[in-house]
Image 1 (tube, rainbow, N blue to C red):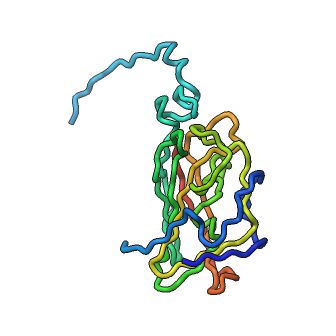
Image 2: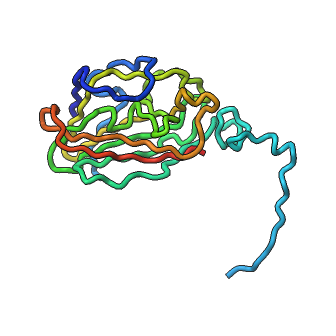
Image 3: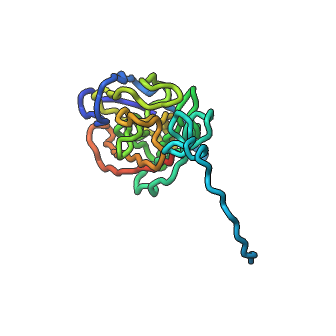
Length: 234
């Protein structure tokens, strides 16, 4: 896999910029490359109503833990699942997303891995290099943000809501994948700094990104498609 970049060509457009993420040269430190080897009885029950004490113990999110999730106290907050993914695109590459760390803890937020695989029989150059693995991407409602796992971000451990915006260098990166080759990125799931009243907001959120297929020189876009997925925090 070859990674290149052109400075001051296009911004990632991720919202309010406050903390510089830095310019990463060559391949990202936490980006991995790999090649695929590829009749009942009717009954009735009576449910007891919760006591006043039990009702008061629940927060608006359904638990009494400080992370704003729906898990018992001490588990570190809400867990994430992939709720849905778009169909495979009509393109030579296949995007994929998976959960690698389902629950938030004091050590890390929920973790995902985005992967793009070249399923064609010839090399493919893609852009933008960070966007295709969903690095520095907000969800469509700006409630959550995906950030590379190897970064140091302004967020309180255990809460994982960003206290400041994240800025990204103004450059356009391209990634060239040989036939059967993949590029992937480990991602942490953070609450956006706009969500001041919660840590990781529960519910379903959608992420999407544009994938550009470039010419051999990596200068001109030949075609593009949008692909995305939804996560559920609960």
